[in-house]
Length: 143
Image (cartoon, rainbow, N blue to C red; front, side, top):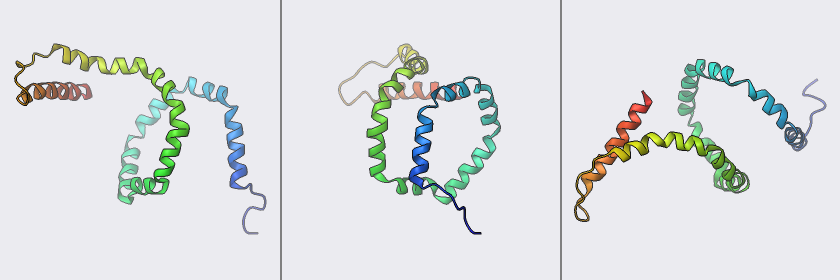
């Protein structure tokens, strides 16, 4: 008795998945509303598995194979059909997070004492001061 006798076609399965998911926004919202701590605990405890799986994927060349399988056309199609519509709302949703995350770097830049400005082509020292200050701030933020 080989195989399953009654199996949907991939197209029928995709249609059912899409139709059901389209009406599940409330269930999705309800499901994630109280899941933050559980997500954090489980994600943190999976760090070793993540590292192991990442190394395995690197060994298999999975990243490059996935890119090759998807191809340039899929990237462009998804960026145009999905990304373009989501971009504005994503930016609006992340506006406060952006401001919070860049504030320490803006403060660092505002507090810098730069060397005197010189003639064009002789200001590398000023750029170095900025680069080192931002690098130091970034490294400190990781601690």
